[in-house]
Image 1 (tube, rainbow, N blue to C red):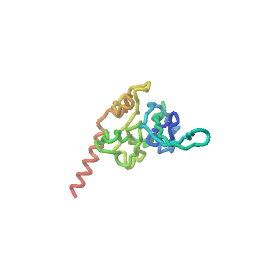
Image 2: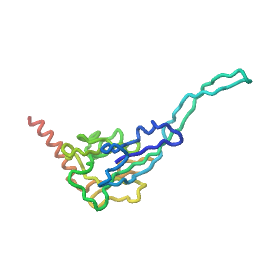
Image 3: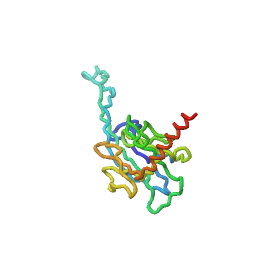
Image 4: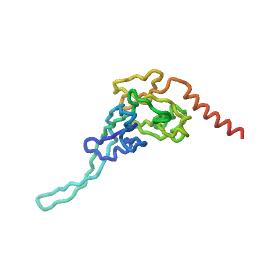
Length: 209
């Protein structure tokens, strides 16, 4: 998963700092090309809070009496953001313990839908989605498999295919710019039971000491 950001109409590049998201496992805006292909999930234009700056102009009375006068300028910045999901290519077999694991999703200030807690579980890395959503991804199978839930992908009001594959169920992640975002996870309690057992075992061992 990765997200690109482009300033619009002369907006400064730093306005993209809270939107740009690399695929941290590859170090760029790209997918691993052997197994995956990038699929655009959405494209949104976000209008940012007004930005003000002091500028100067030269004012003259006649041809000799000139002064520099400061004045305040208000800028209305906007950025274009595109989210991409790295989807497994058709007819490709993915080896065991290959590919990113999914550890839940949450909006700013809210709990993770999968774990029922704040933030990402284990060593899962946070991935920014849009303006206010975070997805948790990891390749650390040794530590994070117990927290993971099989995921098929993401879709939004803009994608042509708005369904999940058989065996997966859609869940509403967020609404950004009046556009609903969904993700598809395995239609089974097994994954959720793994997480539940993990926490039960932790507390059982802690109190039995």
